Image 1 (cartoon, rainbow, N blue to C red):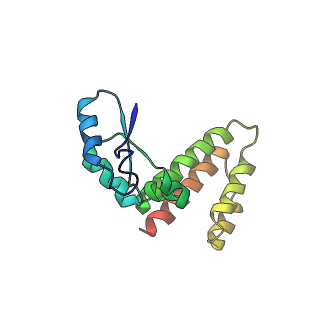
Image 2: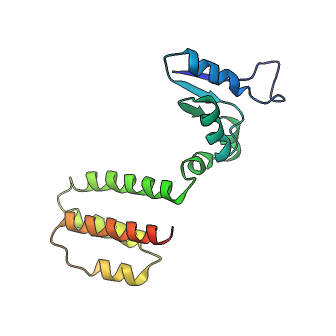
Image 3: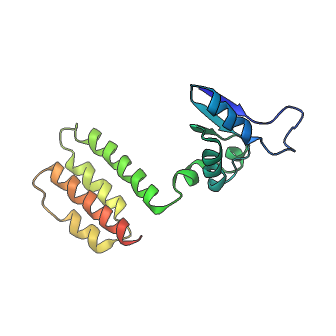
Length: 151
């Protein structure tokens, strides 16, 4: 991979990054290209990807100004946040199922995730599940239903 910061030393930070250079590099190279320069908002990140065709983004100064920029870029729509949450839950459940008795940890997670839904939380935590897998499936179903109801 190569990262291209499309500004010259003489430009300093006074001239806009020349994204067209990144586009040319992407067209000419057979390796992944990472674009850098003037990515200050989620929209700028999308614009660079669209305009240059680059494979990855590198963010420098804006990350120091706004450490949440990466989260903002990934979470540009509620669906993206849902996908990220479900991927995180999948990873959690994968590792938690390796424990001897994962049900307690699953209920602890449910208690946290359902904090703002007291009735739902009470109902879930007082349910007797056949096994940890059943508790996992029920929790995922509740979360997906709640998230999609808010779209």
